[in-house]
Length: 126
Image (cartoon, rainbow, N blue to C red; front, side, top):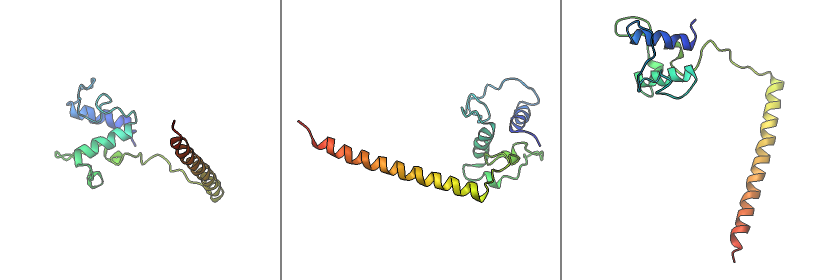
């Protein structure tokens, strides 16, 4: 399996007719100058949305009109399929949910305090 960066290089070579030099395109989402995201996978996702339409990269068949295979196809959804998914054990999940609940209640409490403080300070004007 190729990496996203290798897939971008191969696509740029195909686009430029086999030549490998710095692309000067200002509209191609694969170019770091045109699309400022540093992630290769996200640039591929943006390029595929341009190619197939905003809502249709899932429907891409991964073939060019001349019948060759697109090297960007595995990464078309903006995710790397080879990257292992993070799995949590039940204990880790319970700990994470407890931490989120604790932080959520703390943030809500701070928001209430700020809201009450802002009404009191706004009512006192001289």
